[in-house]
Amino acid sequence: MHINIVEEDRVSQAVEGASGPTRRGAHLTLRGLTKRYGDRTVLDAVNLKIAPGEFVAVVGRSGCGKSTLLRAIAGLERPDAGQVKVGGGGHAPEVRMMFQDARLLPWKTVLQNVALGIKGGAARARAALDSVGLAGRAGDWPAVLSGGQRQRVALARALVHEPQLLLLDEPLGALDALTRIEMQRLIASLWTRHGFTAVLVTHDVQEAVVLADRILLVEEGRLALDLEVGLARPRARGGVDVGSLEQKVLDRVLDMRHNAAGNKENRAA
Amino acid sequence: MAAHPASRPLAAWLAPLAPWALPVLLVVVWQAAAHTGLLSSRILPEPWAVAAAFWNLALSGELWTHLKVSLWRALAGFGVGAGLGLLLGLLNGSSRRAATLLDTTLQMIRNIPALALIPLVILWFGIDEAAKLFLLSVGVFFPMYLNTFHGIRAVDPALVEMARSYGLSGWSLYRDVILPGALPSILVGVRFSLGLVWVLLIVAETISAQAGIGYMTMNAREFLQTDVVLVGVLLYALLGKAADVSARGLERHFLRWNPAYR
Image 1 (spheres, one colour):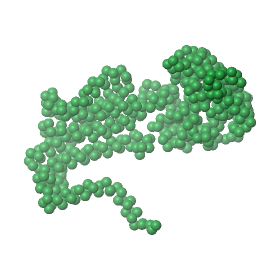
Image 2 (tube, rainbow over the protein chains, first blue to last red; image 1 turned 180 degrees about the horizontal axis):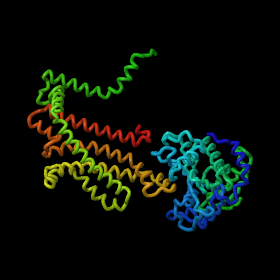
Image 3 (cartoon, chains in turn brown, red; image 1 turned 90 degrees about the vertical axis):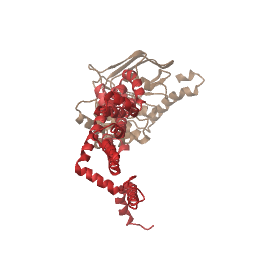
Image 4 (cartoon, rainbow over the protein chains, first blue to last red; image 1 turned 30 degrees about the vertical axis):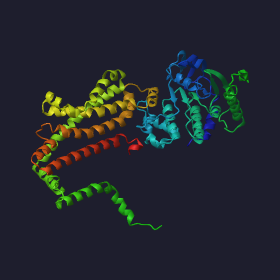
């Protein structure tokens, strides 16, 4: 992978924090968002505000509703109550999503996949492919790529539309540990460069701490935790800051297991 | 372990000939049996006689006339039957309403063997070309219809969801996601139909024809020209094989993105 880490340093120093109104990021507002499946309430009147350009991670146990939350934002699920508002500084914002599996069309070449949905944008597609380090594979079929490479193509496909809001639904879950680390660096550098708002759903707490400005925990359909990360970028994976924050969030995420009997007093700790 | 360089170059050119070893052996045995009189020429003429009959028919132009007529019938039957099968398969696969209206009726018709319809067909269409076209079309329709229908229904919904979220809808969704996704199944239908059309043609051509390979074969039977009968049978086999090869060629081209079809 040809991600220039030095470039990442320089760029991140130039960007002061990740907030502040920017035309490149959309702001996102959820009001009373509720989603039920049968008699199971997956999302219970969720209220949330995300500023333009923020990188937000959503963590939680599997089945807690974090994917449903993301899909509701994307418009792939219709909420039973409440509303989702995505605003992009005047014009309708571009929202793009990355799924857990790359979902590339197997009958189109890599370049054609990246160019999906844009009219006459072969040059832009090539540029996007180049930014994820796969410029040489433009003419290949997806079947010959590895899982990590396919996800990189999916990332290029999402970015070629220059989205103001990028939704990531556990995109790195199926990858091996090393590829995951490289992909995290790639996503971080592209986010720094483009400045879109990002919402990442992940079960990997370390990933959330390394990438995000803000960590949300979904528990029993509600947002049980809303934590500012506030660490300087780039973040050292083995560093004390990252490690202690990761431990704190992990403890909180796993908290309910120790209280299986329903003892809710430990929740506030 | 000693190397055997002599055997390796032999194996390389032997490989493509291997599938033909058995048929060639059979022909040799057949020729020997006929020549030594073990096999009566009325039951099965020797291969040489068949080749000679083939040559004579080709020279006199009869072969081409019959071949042309049969080929035309097969293409017309395939065109109408498979074409309709494709259209209805696409329609019923894509639209739930259409499927509800039409599918049950089609399934009922499907279970009537095409060849059992021959008496009815003769009553309706006479013994002319229309009867043969009808039989061929009906027979070829169903494999195409079923495979197209299934292909459309079996398109990966995850891909459709992704494409929708990327702004594809209506015709662009159909062209870029649904049709290519259904194509492997549709091509199975094509292969099936192309093979079936020859089987049905043989029977259709026995319903009183004036030309065609079936007519040539039946005529030869009347005159006990078993070598010409065999020429007819061989022609059917060769044409069927040619159809299958072209269907496989289509698969190899349209499905070249799939490593299973290389």
